[in-house]
Length: 126
Image (cartoon, one colour):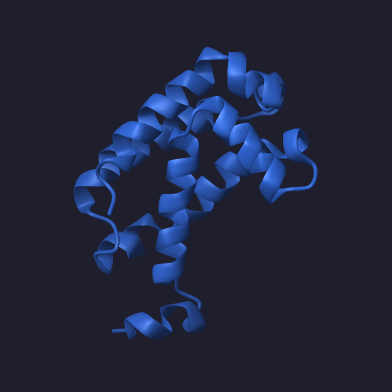
């Protein structure tokens, strides 16, 4: 078994990656105005990178089984995180391009649902 401190160094997601995943869920759970402000601070383009909200979540979600294995994420949170992942998947694709703008973050019910699901998952995370 890999030493927990060395997980990042051998190509496995480590504790820092799990913390980044929790942060991604927290940002998805935030009010729309907070999400827009976070994007503006984190990325120079701001509104042009709304998809970064989902990309950061997706990157961590792909490592969810490892996070659970090392007990960085409680297995009880997996169903809520899976539901959040499904919602984001339903919003993806070229036909949904209009959902990935700063205006859509504030006005679209799909993003309201993302926030509700992310809040439900967040209370189950460390």
